[in-house]
Image (cartoon, rainbow, N blue to C red; front, side, top):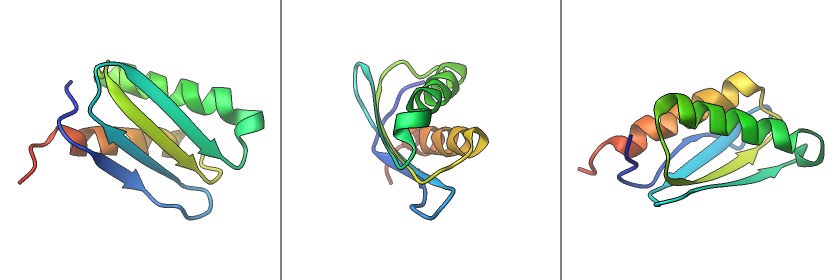
Length: 89
């Protein structure tokens, strides 16, 4: 899947995450999280796994996590990817 435009999904509320995607040739993931020291590797693995499942190989991904569960992070990534694949109107 090709990321065609900048897109985001989620909020900065407690127990949620804001995921922003931008087009890029390479895959770059940056994570800001209140629990990064403890769960940073797990968050990154969740994001990578979701992107891999969706066939995304190139994108700049920025995750602002506020203590979200993996299922929430995965849903936010998937929604952002689907939004980023649509042509801008």
